Length: 360
Image (cartoon, rainbow, N blue to C red; front, side):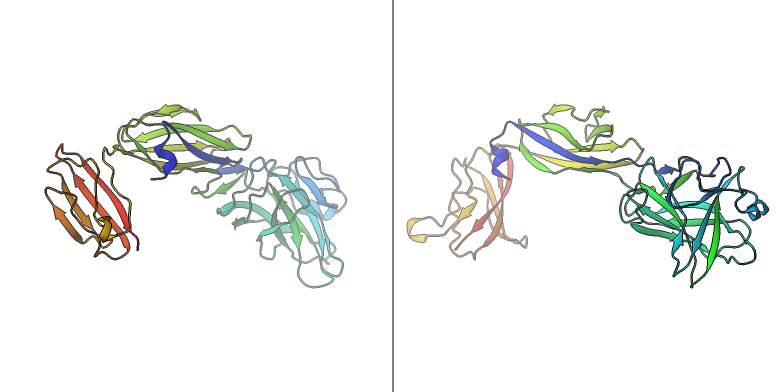
């Protein structure tokens, strides 16, 4: 057991928690792109990150009136030129709750392309994740080539980071190609895998002596409000919405469980095991350097009472010595350098277990 715990009366059992916003369902605002139909403008709260997408159907391209909205009255239109022009009309949205790194996300979106003057071809839509309105840090998903009628696509992706922006970007393969992409009727929420965690609780297990106490406390990194629930096994007491419930003095082995829920609904749980040991009234060696001449080859227990039973084992669990009335007479001179384990049962029926090392 670490020496610092031997000297403390009150020991802090600290859980380190990092919290960030996220829903198990991440909300998309205005998923149907509802707004006033007009060119070079996108409906709030969507933002233009590469000029200049439109709110359709609008008079800039009368052909857009041939494609009514898939949902509601308006939709988002985005033009794209393939290389060497490399022109993309893109929109983005800052998410209320960011994506969850490493978790599976799913959303639906209706897509089509609009045939203008018989020259446009079917393009594709790409969805990116990033950290600002212009940041296309990771390509999350790409559709197949679109048709001139609405089709619903299921986008499934796993972000590499906790991105708080998504960007919709049209794409077309080849050179000297142009397409005009229509997007509508996104899912109102992005579904996040139920095993995702954006709240991380980390706990450490410790040993204490009977009669010592521990201070339960949680250190939260971040400014978001959190709910905390403490519980213990086997007693089962609870502190709800209290990060630092105070001091506890367990008299038996316990497991203290901290569950943290962030402001967006995801939770994380961690457990710290506390082993409660009885103070040993004897001085039992932990390291032996056998010197036969000086008598320092004996496994000597200071203060040993009569009729104490001792067993010694090697690291394989093989019993090397046993005495029902130990007289401090076991010599380690013939033992190779290694780690060994003992079991001591005293005349007052107390049991002690430990280990010692033979060093040469």
